[in-house]
Length: 520
Image (tube, rainbow, N blue to C red):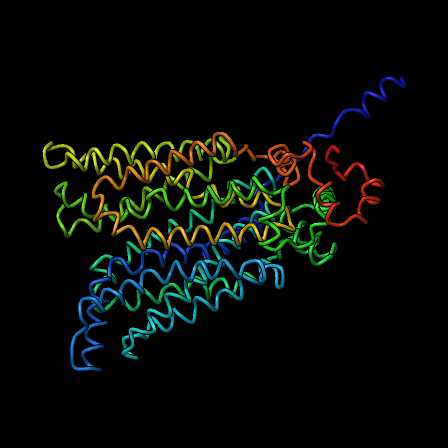
């Protein structure tokens, strides 16, 4: 009888899987439509109406000074219009840490709407005010909005999601980014808003999702992890979890949060400088830097740049090219949607490897097709196929997964600083590609895609040898998984943490079950 009782006690309780509740679904939609959608929309919103906007710049300058813009000045002004957006994204990334620690994840998203609504109004009224300068300045400000939202939304949703749904919900921001790009392409069609009269409205529409988010997001909870671990309010954190999980029993999640907090208690709020020199997080930091560089330097912007030329060379009429571009954008959306449904079953690592492998192969074949497209009649069609295959590869892995991995590889104390680093690398790489691609294209021609293939291959190899699978694991379990790579005990890193604060050694002796020590 005693043996039976002992066996019953030894049986571990079956872990209850999280479910997609209505509150979790709605807060995901509100935050991604209100924030991530704008990022994608503003990436593509100036592409189609570019000739009409440049004409407005010229006419405004002519009215003021009695002469038209010189070619050089026109090029400079348009380059600023395009490139200040990613530069603003970089500045926005630098604000992530201070803002999310001070006013929370939800609070940051609410304040961030200012950086969308104000420029939307200014761009929409730029023709009435006869000022192209407000468009250029607004692109910088709305870039700040994108820099904040591209980092805060994944953090906010990742901290609220149950671990078995964290991948799918973590891909949602990227899905809405691709939908934003697609909607800008659709609205930019000549017969809709991509014309001389409609382009100010096209630019101003970005303010609508921001207004929607400003109205609806206050009805949803703040991140429970932020509320508990940074604000110290267990009651509010418990209420938020109960709403998000649609059940009263959330004690296990609260306990897991406390264990995570205890394991990193001496870190405090890591600054970017401390994060860059903190040995227990060395390989996590290197991983997110490599993945974000690979994401942007792998040639996605170059492929989109080349797409129209390749379509034209394949015999697609000029007036039809914009519709083919919309079709390519639709493929991007559909494959990102597919990633939402497979990321928690296939895993993050496999999708990254598959995505970068496809992109590398597509770039190599595209180079061959571009070199021989004038001598082999079917090569232009192979080029179109390569573009579509490349977009598919990028959409299932390199585009969405780095956001998910950044959330999962870092715990509460280091996550804001990690997103600042990841976001800064993301936007600086984006800015760099925009800055140098034209020179690469002129210098290397079709062979520039070999460079992108090499970057895809290097990122593939790094992920294969370094990045572990993180699906279905708690933040603390992922930290323990990375401990060996950082030269620490498999369990975790607290000896270094104790070295930062020796007074904690007594605490770790008292609570061995949540304090993790490295070997001497």
